Amino acid sequence: MFGSIISAIFSGIISPIVTAWSDVKLQSLKSEVDGFTAAIGGDAAIGKAFLEAQTQNAQIKAASNTWIGARLIIVAAGLPAAIHFGAVMLDSTFQFGWEIPKCPPPYDSYEWSIIQSFFLVAPAMPIMSAAAAWLSRRH
Image (cartoon, rainbow, N blue to C red; front, side):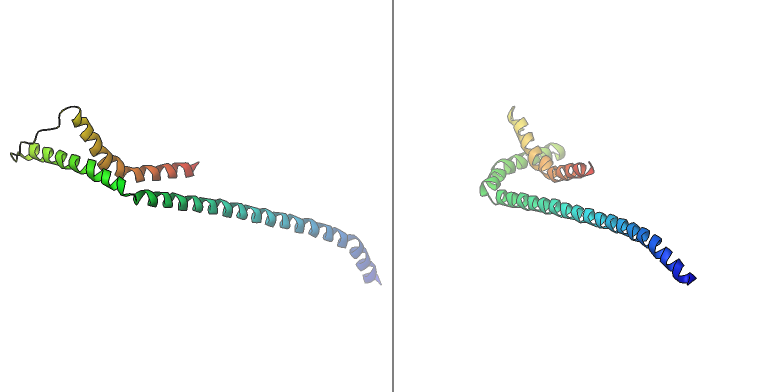
């Protein structure tokens, strides 16, 4: 009889308290799971948009690299300037006796600009864009 009285008291008092506490905890956990699910969905959308942008960028680069005009400009402007500059440098350094004159002004500065754009700036562009991308990710 004493056990049934204690059982009735505990089931009448403790059971609603435990049930209310467990409902609050369950709702809190459901809320956290919903938040994580929303965050994962947002990250997935951002990642998908980033991959689509990279794909479009690669397609644009591929399209511009297939144009024969750019390659012809490089050959027509870059190759003669590089050969002349190299020949002048070799002849003046090692005294081969070729007696190749340097370009008269203002063409000497044009030649140097062409040499810089093809052999200094163009190879450095991927490094500069990678550094810019790295710096933008840090913020």
